Amino acid sequence: MSETAVSEAAIDPRQFRTVLGQFCTGVTIITTVDDGEPVGFACQSFAALSLEPPLVLFCPTKGSRSWAAIERTGKFCVNVLAEEQQTVCARFGSREPDKFAGIGWTPSPLGSPIIDGSLAHIDCTVETVHDGGDHFVVFGRVSSLSEVKTERPLLFYRGQYTAIEPDKTVPAPWRDDLEAFLTATTEDTWL
Image (cartoon, one colour):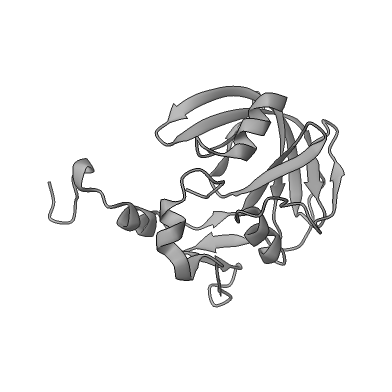
């Protein structure tokens, strides 16, 4: 084992998050409608999985209330955020009880919320769910797609929002209270 390698037993969650933060990701809001109410959460653990059949994946925390709603409905919409949607992301990454307050949306073909101003959306049904430690790995079958807009995406890198140019970073709202963020296990949080 090299000097810089660390054994699994000694992995510090804060260091793990810092190392993973070196990987720039896009930011999405995963949504559904449960008992007539829109629900959703900010999610950066989203990826394309397969072209044939068309599958995507996302990874909610096991205690996520939004995931519980998505699991009940069996459908969800992935909203890819545009650079200007930092406040939308912050709201959906918070513990606000009504994350849709003041957020415009329209129903997707499957009925899940498409957030106004999103760069793109992907409407899906839940295909399979797999264990992933303290998260689930959810495979979704793509039902429909949006047209693509020309605006730039909202990105997350080293604990900050960023744009395509590295010098356009804005601190995430929870950055100053990282300890509270790391200990939040029952709310909708990012990996």
